[in-house]
Structures are given as structure tokens and as C-alpha cells.
Image (tube, rainbow, N blue to C red):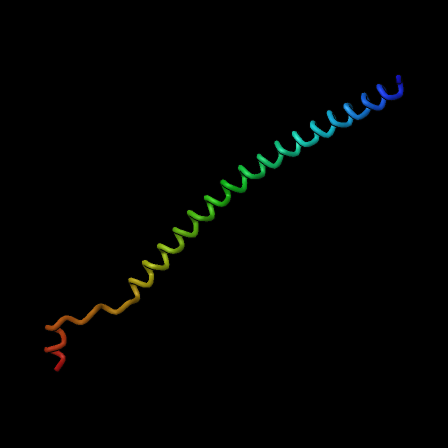
Length: 75
């Protein structure tokens, strides 16, 4: 009977240790998730800024459309 209580006590101790280990791991995973989310937002902002720069550059490089006055004087 005493050995059964000892076995139960050992199982409870292991369960408590496992619970603590899982809580610690969960805490670390939440921290990593927060950091990765912030990094993701930063990358999205950098991508938007790069896209705006490329669009501005393309707009600057495109030839101006000819107006009807320019077309008539060229003839």
C-alpha cells in the first residue's frame, strides 16, 4: 500500500515537472512569436517602401505621352 502511494507521489512529481517545463517552453515560444511578428511587420514596411521607390522610378523613366499639339508640330 505504501509503495502504491510512493508510485503515485512519483507520478505527481513527474507531472509537476513536466507542467513546469511546458510552461517555460510556452513562455519562450510566446516571446519568439512576438519577436517574429515584429520582424514581419518591419519586413512588410520595408517591402512597401521598396515598392514605392520602384514605382516612382518607373514613373520617372516612362516617356511623357505625346499631346496632339506635339504630334502636329512634328509632322
